[in-house]
Image (cartoon, rainbow, N blue to C red; front, side):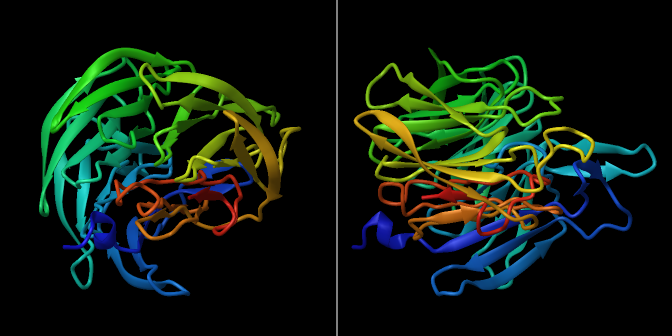
Length: 374
């Protein structure tokens, strides 16, 4: 009998927002626009090969990185953040379902939409591939069961009053951390089988907590905080290092990083943190803090403290991606028209669940440079 890790697939799924283009820091929705889509990439060989492209789904770059998840067996992709654009009203419309894509099929195809009663962004799937958590704009975490290729809503857990953002199962699957995007801080949920309940635990973060990632060694979580909106300079923001080795979980370090760190990732062994920041590349040309490129910063965790080791400037363009098991390092990126999200599961103990790292559209990051999911 093969181990769960041996059953993992090397899959990248990249969800594209065809509607949105950021031009000199300004959001535009040109007409006509290509359809939103999902690209499925086989990463078992190098260079990776496109397995198929799925059109007819909805997606947006607005929101945190983790809006695509892949089951550990590589058979299903779940796509959140569905939107449409009303060109007459000049308004983006947010829908309330998650989309189920059969990526085992040839070609891959959209097989269903599950109404969850709220617009969801962050997604996380447990290592067994049976439980999906979706963080929603209405302050609830939607709890969905996965049975083969059937996905259904089981419950919802009230966590806050405003938008939630990134979410991640802990290494043992007995808890989850969800970012309270508009209320600040992060909440801890308890998980027992298919039952998910709120707890009294709260984790201190920076302003506007966004993406969440957790190492496989049972020691650390990292939370990116994108800071206040409306800025005209690229000032410093922070990412939060959280000790998850014992309950209650606690923040141990607020790490200064370049502005708007939308992509964060931590290595499976809990040693390295990669942070992808817009660093002013999302600002308009008239803003004094405008930069043409974002920044990637690498930190090493040693003796319980993170120290900066490297910073890399990145080129413009690209997409956001999500990788499934097998890759120790999964670069993700930002894009003009793309919301590329990537899932890396081999780094999770025994292929725990799908993860995502992404840089936001318009931050001007290169597809291979934007952020690392290790």
